[in-house]
Length: 555
Picture (cartoon, rainbow, N blue to C red):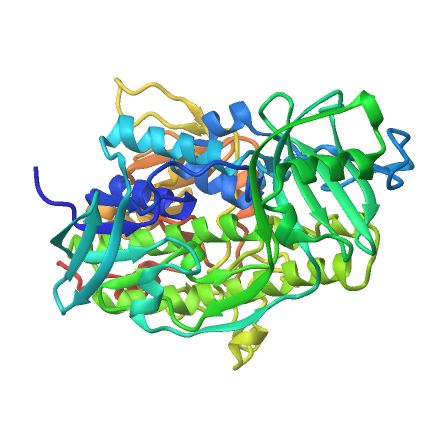
């Protein structure tokens, strides 16, 4: 068995997703974590819709949906006044999924449970266990790879990898030894203790909140584990340092603060942390053969933001490393990783920090935590990226010179789909028979995408137009590009001939509605991370996009 090509330092969600993405691309990995035992705790327990779409690309949507649950409705109470609610509100109002957006609701799932699902996939499908108690001590890189020193069980050994990626959090050694800056501030807005506690007698159908942040706020959210609640204890009257190390004192605080008396029993505290918000981010995501993803890039002020943003880092980075490693793309492709992700992370920090300040500085009621659509992360885009191509009418004026002004979360984007946007879904596609032995089947557009290849969607009923695209793809790297012809419902051309890898009929028109373009554009290239790399008018546009991401035309 060959040595792993990529060393991933950190076994949290970002590292596990990176490992799975690379393995699906045929790149071998080794995942280490200096912690001797698996982490426990709900931690960042909110899974945003965009994250669910990416988990679907990994084939893991079903096991996550089996255990995750919608964000519960909140009951509010006066501090120390018992179980007599003063009102209810939706922390994250429910939205019905649409054809283009199959996931529109925030789901709750403990980070430890999510990590277990990801680890199981790595171990059972790829025989890639997480090596606990293994610490990266140092590294030195050259043009071809990275020499590392690792410590395990008191012994130190050297090894060499083609790549090293740090995903071990804001205090990780990879970021420190790379020497990238970590500018920002530690937010002193208030004192916060977070953790998990077993509770008997409290309704698990609701999220419960007593008081407010002006004095004391007690938040108890149910979890996927029976009787286990995730808690937040915050406010100016909280001695967070002592509370985080005093389980009995915490329980007494819950009894006193809720006023629930004997109706509620507060039991074992399974995990607790003294939480201090940080708003920091790097100015570069790596260099050469050493890169950062997830918590290595940011320290964030809001518990729901970091994990979701981190796995998007991993998806963006994985396909680029894989293409370079397999000889399809130049090393300069990685310049786009920092270029694309820094504006997104900067906006995430801005938005989540604003929510924190509303609650703990302005002392507004908890209902301000209701999330705007942009925090669902479905509008995250890379329209400004140097490697995307859009041949629709010129829209250079949309992009300011200062990257801090990019609308990276899509809060103000128009309805016109552009290169750099998230690729929409479309159900009710029917595969057209390419031979007598292939049965037609119904599928979604997401079923056609993969984190292991680009997908060229050709919206045409004309065989010759599709053939021109197929011929251009064949001249580049056909192993990592798939061509799909999409025909309108009821087209008389549905009998072929078909030149693409797959042909589908858009029986309800959802695909043509979602992928509606101007200026004669009829072909879309969806990248392995689920973003649109290009919107083009002809095979020359296809060629121009491939020139920006691949090494050279082969024919």
